[in-house]
Amino acid sequence: MERRVASCVIFVLVIFSVTPAFAHNVQSVYIFGDSLFDAGNNHYNNNCSAQADFPPYGSSYFHHPTGRFTNGRTVADFISQFLGIGIQKPFLEAQLEVVNGSRKEYPFNGINFASAGSGLYRATNSDLGVTPIQDQLQQFQTLMDQKLIDRKLLEKSLFFFESGSNDVFNYFLPFDPPTLTPDAYVKTMLTEVEHFVDQIYKLGARRIALFSLGPVGCVPARTLIPGAPVNRCFGKMNRMAKNYNKGVENIAKNIPKNYPGSVGVFGSVYSIFQLYRTTPSSHGITNVTDACCGDGTLRGMLQCGQEGYKICDNPNEYLFWDYFHPSEHTYKLMSKSLWADNKYIHPMNLKTLANLTIT
Image 1: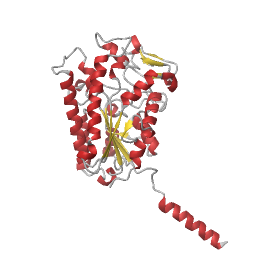
Image 2 (image 1 turned 180 degrees about the vertical axis):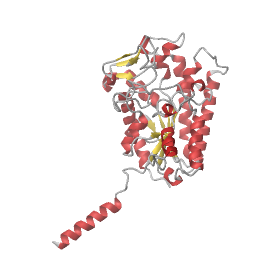
Image 3 (image 1 turned 90 degrees about the vertical axis):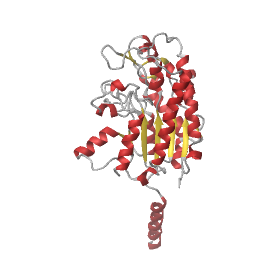
């Protein structure tokens, strides 16, 4: 009997000695981007008018508005839950809690810096008070400079980057006609992506995931652009998005070569989204054109939650939640593909990236 007890004790000790504290080699996620990732930063920015902090945003999962521009979780939220590390706080919320003393330090599971409406051009929606990608990077750098984030933690972190949709969309707005050609405009955007990758690597990032734009020309809000088609996607806008995506894919491909000890992956959100548009019934979707929540043509002429809005009965059957953004159901489908599929993300999926041992 004593031998059996001793054996059991040894067995338990062995289990605890080889079982890591986390199921993957990643303990935190740092997120940079726009409304597709924003977890509520704009809500904590008193000078920002690009908001989703009112009903019915957040109604399907959180059951209250969180500042996310959808009815529930985003891709960043789902991936963090797949990792088992919990959803990241918006930077401005965490900063407020540290300043007022309600928490002693910044979260160990990462931070979300994304700001809805922002872009790679500083001028993109600057009148709305959004935080451009350059300033998001500066916020992270300041935390590093002040040693408020342990640099060793970054070796076991994922870095998510997604930006550019607002830049491309705004290129076609009539209020301030662009002076650059579409190719030159995209080239400048890609220069900013290269700068971001360079700086984030210098600050300690080693697992870097760059995500493509979706088919921006298919969002219901295209009805706000004079001359944009209603019965099909806006081809000129999608061509710009695809041109940009090719550049981002190339940047991701060259990360290991340009930045020793690092790994880059490219998630083709555009391809995933087009799959749902062409085979919606296979993914539980019945409407790929209209927003679930909004008003006007395609429900794309009024933001969800604004006076006079209408809402569908089942958001899970809609590709789009509001005039710009996917529904939580769409985000969940996308997250599963990016996490465990190898068809739309390369050279490896996010699960494999999280399990890598990087020295």
